[in-house]
Length: 483
Image (tube, rainbow, N blue to C red; front, side, top):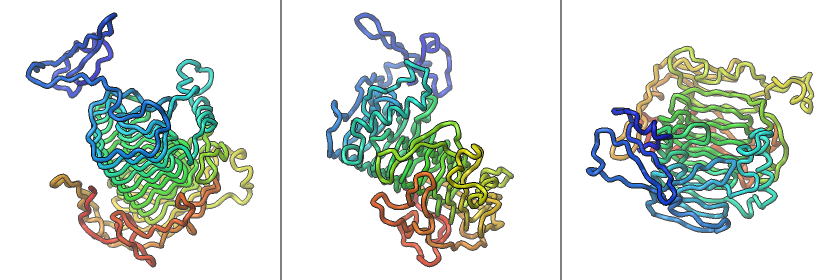
């Protein structure tokens, strides 16, 4: 049942709508009275429960390290909202610690967050609510420094493993966390039906919702039927998003106000909005983008970046846009002239730094200047459009279909994509040809400093090291299992 905001709203007749069954609580001196609008149904004939537990599994104090939670079903918790600017509770959560393993669990029906890898309480929490003289952005920056001063570092916080869980029917996010998620692995989870009731508005609602996910690996997850599939925000640096399947989401992947380097590789992004890139310094390689692909600079907020593989702050800058590497991807359009299918939205971006403009004055010389991009060897179908300066773009006239099929609890993608008469072979993607992100001066590399080699596909199949197949699948096929 939906929570009404007032007694008046509770009594409105909304029969036939999904949110027609509502409740409202009145706190009196000695009791709390619940009122329910059951419309035409008799509540005596149904199971009506009131969930009041704030958590299912959550330490009362921070710093409870190296706990494993395995094979447990946890559901129905009245979790509070988990903002990045405040304490972040969840149905299950690590409470500002290190080295947890949460695996093979079922997590569902959390009022807000399912699994929290988030932030502890801090003196700077939610300052914007009581003092609006500073912007939310400035308060957030101060809060980050406050937590660094209080011990946010790789040696003490993060490095969790969240794997092979099913997480669904949560009101805010499936997995969420600010800073406490750093250096973690999010692997093989099935996350679905998150924030689909739209009880809450604003930000911070996604299947995977992280702030400051420094050196986080998001791999092999299936995320569908969510408001946002994965929303990564602020200090997204050294983050690796690979071999995931996203579909039927409002937006599959959203990276916000970050400076890179980040790698998005071997993913299937099948929703109508595949990727909104409100950042710079992202390498997108060997993906299938079936929806809109939008690069969007953000020159309104100064945001932090870190020293490589560390929580120590390396600098602060605006997000000018660009500095992206887009190669060996497949873009599928909607058949119309929508310029956001493909890489055409980069058409005003340069290929290299202006020779007349010294690199060290680039940010102050022209606030509308964007960093150059490196785009090559992508395949465009169904009228998807290429970057006007792209090197070696490929296209074909085939009308491609993508069908999602659910059978025996599994999801499959069926497609005629590989019937296209096109050159499907590109070059091997490695740290050497990706280079480094401009602002952070950090190479596109593994979090241990090892070189990246995109030598496996979506399913983990070894790629041809001489001429790998463009897109996420090395073996040409008509049907692929998503989960």
